[in-house]
Amino acid sequence: MSQNDWAEQLLSWAEQEPDYDDNNTDDNEADDNETDDSDSTLSPIETPCPNKRHQSKTRGVEYSPRNRWTKKQHTLLLVIYKFFESADKNVHAKVYKALTGLDLKTDTIRHRFDHLVLSGGKAYPEFKRVMSDTPINDPLGSFSKMRNRIEKRAYSLNIELRYRDKELSLTPGKAAHAKCFRTRALYHHLVQKAQTSLNQETEQTDTRSFLRDETMEWPIIPGHSTILSQIYARQ
Image (cartoon, rainbow, N blue to C red; front, side, top):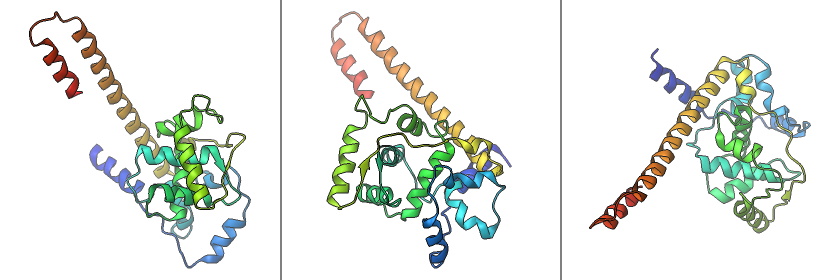
């Protein structure tokens, strides 16, 4: 299998929809009654790849749902979980759906957050920016506008959503040492993809900075202002 075929296979794993059994209400109710601790949603990596029967309950964590998730969508989801809490563990997903208008199952949104935690900041830089680099009180106001939107939408829906007074207890990046080969392979693919994207953004920033520095040293000649305006317009 070539490198391109291997990358396509990993992406196909990442886009698989969790195959929940909507008729199995007993199992769902049992899951809701379990103690909700920070590591409970990350348990699949403690065991080998699940068999087909057990897979329906764990694939939502190990694989990305069938949606082309963007950095902005990730950031909004992370901000909701980072700064807000509720006694109802489905509230974060409900508010997210109301804000984005995405036609996604509540479980799908919850599992996406679990997937982000499982992968960590090396695989998703937006996770690092929100969950690691920003304190719970957000002193720089990096996400103040987004938090206001979330708060207003929750109020309009009559949903109880409170600000957290302490950080979430999470252990991100466990996928790097998962026993399941697919989980590890997908993790390393995502890390490589994130690093490539970061390098490209750095190169573009350096190029723009170089062009601005160079244009400042040009002599003033007829048509000079027109040339500068064209250069900046292309950026």
